[in-house]
Length: 141
Image 1 (cartoon, rainbow, N blue to C red):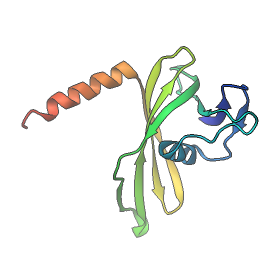
Image 2 (tube, rainbow, N blue to C red; image 1 turned 135 degrees about the horizontal axis):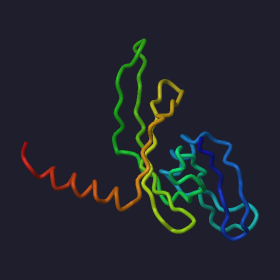
Image 3 (cartoon, rainbow, N blue to C red; image 1 turned 90 degrees about the vertical axis):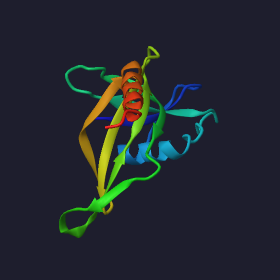
């Protein structure tokens, strides 16, 4: 389970988001968090992530979050529109190591259903995959 809060690095206060993780990431992909109400300094989005099997669990700073320019939608069961929201979230550990986390949601109507198999790669692994992708994209099939 993932929890989130806003953290002021100046006065070291944590503020709950009172939002779902989907809403927090969606908003964070569009704009920076509001400043701290106590001291007026910038706040950051912090995520406590449980990756299972002990793989990198802990609290992370969300450095940035991205969504594709165009989201993919289709008609699902009962002819209801389904939209896929695949996020790319750059996380940073307390030690400064960065990871690329890719949670996704299927949104039907107003209900966001979390995709349980979100991959989280160390940034060098992600860069390696993107480089390979770029090389192969140039090769004709």
